[in-house]
Each structure stands twice: as C-alpha cells, then as structure tokens.
Picture 1 (cartoon, one colour):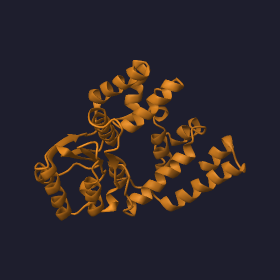
Picture 2 (cartoon, rainbow, N blue to C red):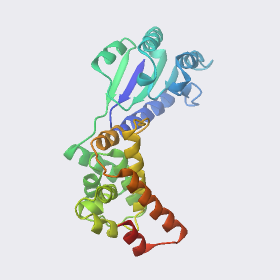
Picture 3 (tube, rainbow, N blue to C red):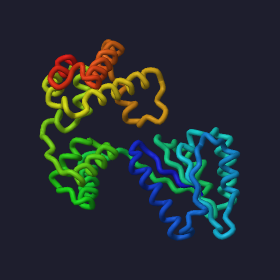
Picture 4 (cartoon, one colour):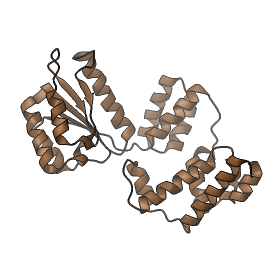
Length: 275
C-alpha cells in the first residue's frame, strides 16, 4: 500500500503523515518496532531492504519515506510498486511530497494500492475556519485567530507558529499590513516599497535584520537554482521578485547586523544606518 500526502501546504501534509503513523501504532504495533523512517537518498535497494525487515511479532510493516516520488527514477518506482502490489496491505509506505503528483504518476501508483491525500493551499474562509479550529483547541480568542489568518494568508506554518505564540504569551496584533507581517516589512525594506522607512522604524526591535538577510539569501538561492528543501510557495514568489543591486543590499544589511551585534551601532542608529 502506498499513501501519498502531497501539495504545497506541507504543514497539513506532514500532519496527516503523523496521524497515519500514530493510527498504525495504535491499531497494529504499540511498540513501534515495525515503524521506520527512511531517507530517499539511501536509494531504492536500501528502502526495499527495510521493507523486508519484518518483525517476528507483527505481520505489518510501516515505512515513511518523504520525497519518494521525486527521489527515485520511473524504473525504480515501477519496481517498488510491484513489491507493494504483492504485499498489499501488509506493507504500508507513506510519503510526503511538496509538489502535486501528475495524473499519470497517480494512475501508475494505483496498483499499489494507492491512497492519495492532496493538500492545496487554503484561501479565504476555508483557511480562516481552519485557523479558528486550531485556535479553539489552543484557547486563543476567535478575534485573534482571524487576525492571524489574515496575516498568514494561507501559510499554515505561519498560522500555527503565531497561534502557538499567542497561546503562551497573548499580545496585541496590529491592524496594518506592515504590523501584521514582519516578512512583508522585510520585503518592503529590501525593495524600497512605499512606507518602507516607517515600517523599518516600527519593527526595529522585531528581529528585522535577520529576516531581511534570510529573505535575501533565499532570493539568491532561487536565482542560482539552489531550491532544494525550500517551500514551493517561497520559490514561486521569489522567482518573480526583482531586487536591484541585490548583492550590494545583502552586503549593506550584513554590515549593519555585524555592527548591531558588536555594539558599534544600536537602536535608532542601527535603523538610520540601515536606511
């Protein structure tokens, strides 16, 4: 059996994979001895060998291999599918795929047999309802949940991170777009968008420099094609981003960061140097 959790919403995809693992343990193997996690870089022979290491006490085998479809060749996939078709539900392989498998790949995998759980990015009311549900579980007010949903804009990772912070240390969430999204502030400063000076001043205590450098580093990674393990929505966004004199900007921000860490400049002086 092959179970694919796929799509750009990798938080929900990974969460589903964890739920499947927990359900398997609860139903078939509370000890977890028949549950393994493999790296696709090990290669198909090693993965097949893991499937063959069955427990003497449990008849079923559960193996999680994220990035499986992208990490093996079509020939290797066919070989794996033949193995799973023979094992049927005695062997369960779960993979989390950041992309969406093509219709052709899903048709090929259907003989395994296949269970596919797609997780597209949520938008609008659907995303707000999802955030509200999580907020209720954590004891976060609905009003705060709605602000987080607007801030996260479909990014489940960001929403969960903000909900966790609010659950531990409730604090006011501003209404302006700049106050709601520190990453938006970083983008505005880098690209010199409207109101970027005010935004930089407002967020000088919010780890802004680190985020700016993180955003610039990701920009260069996308430009150079080094996007492995990057979130697909980040790659798409930065692929269409233009940063004039990006190298000079990175150098300038790095100098300001070093200055702030060594005490050469701080506070308002740090911001003025940044500007």
